[in-house]
Amino acid sequence: MLNLLLFSSLLTVFLVYKKGAEAGWLSMAAYAVQLILLLLLWNQLPINASISFGFLNYVIHWQMTGLGWFFAVITVGAALFSAWYSAGEWGDSQKDIRLQRITLALNVAAMLILLSSGDFLSLFIGWELVSWASYLIMTHHGGKSADAAFRYLLYAMSGAMMILAGIVLIGVQVGSLEFAEFWKALPNLPNSSLWALVLLFGAGFSVKMAIMPFHLWQAEAYAETPGANAAFLSAISARMGLFALALILLKPIGMERLIDLAVPFTFLDARSLLAWIAALTMIIPTYIALQQNDARLLLAWHGIGQGGFMLLGIVIATPMGVAGGLLHVFNYATYQAALFLAVTAVLYRTGTTNLDKLGGLITRMPLTYVALLMGIIGLAGLPPMNGFVSKWLIYKGLLEAKMPLLLIAAAISTLGTILSVYKLIHNVFLGQLRKEHYEVKEVPWTMAAPMLILVGIGFITGMMPGLALELVDKAQIALGYTALPHNIGGIIWPNGSLNMLLVTGIFFYGVGIGAIIFFLGNRRFITHQWDNYAGGHFLSADVPYNYTHNFYPGVMRVIGPWFRGTLVKLEQFLVNLAQVLAGGFHSFYRVSYTPLYLLVVTVLALAWVI
Image (tube, rainbow, N blue to C red):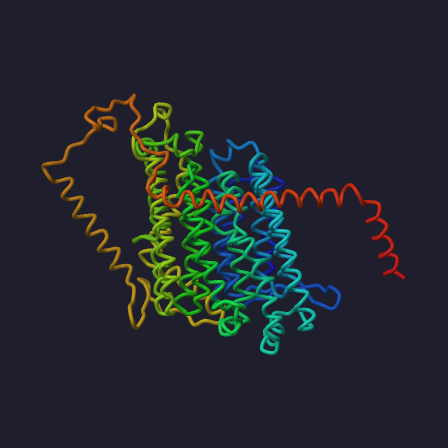
């Protein structure tokens, strides 16, 4: 069955390549078939592929465990909705839609190969395929996206070299590149070797996760990628780093051994170091998102911050924390994909995602408004959407693990998220409608249906989180943790359970009471969108009354100088350093010493043959 799944993903690439611009509905059907094949694997995990081949003294093979299966379901599901969105009118408007569909199919195939890794060599092969496929999906559009993709490529190549160095170290220390042999040898490895593996794998896999300080590439790269593909990238692509980190670093070494690895001259250990890096990733990118005036950049920066939540949940290393971190991967994919699709719908109808040039679109695009409203509730971690459940699990996991400072950090991040998503919905849909948008219409059903169904999934799995926790159980057990006790409505726990059916019922009870008072009360009256009064004057349609730019002046007065000073200077330093290194490598490899390199390679090849 695993062979059939991998073959079907490669076949999808071929079909999309052959059909080109006409492959919209065909690609959607192909991803649906892949999703069905994954669901058929439910009771067969772990499952091996019959394909394998030798390299030197090693055998490269593929195996899908519950962890890989969990991420694969999200991957194919995200591709399905992205393909659906681009199958109709939006796809017809894109000049490069053929390349967009090909690169999406390549990304799905590469990710499935990575998620089916059976040993370190197959893991590295899959990792490199994902890296180059991600580069292609970001760079083919040209312009700013190509520049951002090049920055990503610099990070990815550096990360790949660190991962390769870690694999070589394992080969030398263990004598095998099989996962099982590595796990057996771990108790006998010295702390120096473990520290080297933690640093090499931690940094290498964190590049794709965009964990600080390897985060500077992601926001622009994802924001400038065309809409449907940007939704896919934001939903799942960066989570490949979390998969690899959990598989190679957190599962086999174990938290007990990480706690024993003390950081010299500090009070930290390796586990605390990872936790605080995750906490900084939660906070700083979130407040950078708060300062953005472009809807796509705002969401892309939040994607970095939410990755910190996922890593922190897994680093807690309790059934509650791990379940929260993994569930957040699923929940985030549903609402972040919907949010990117909604913003793409706004861009499609208005031609801009600049928050200073929008407003009042609720009267013209009500379905898109509903999708964005439900999506930001999930992103903010508020009931009744599914984002509340996974964040609740992480909060409770931090409390039970006696990590109060990290809990405060998580709360600070959530506050920044709430502030910025309110800014997003206010500046796009509320306030006065601009004159240039008087004739704007709602997007067609091929664009509206995917984003509404995605937020519908977010609502259903928020009200009944047991449905999503059934998927999480597969990954959690594969990581060596017991499954979190749950039912359809939530979590069953001795010192505090969560019943989302009850929470959702109370929520709608309150909404219903408010609706009765509003509609049946005798003090209600309806005003026109432009019938405003402020500052002693009536405001007509020709007077813009929509505060957008400098939305939170008080907050920005406090945090703005620090961001503009320390972080901007640091980012500019890293960008300049990358440009200098890139120029040096370009000259070194392509200009100055090419004949010498050819001579050296020829001599080494002859020596090896002889």
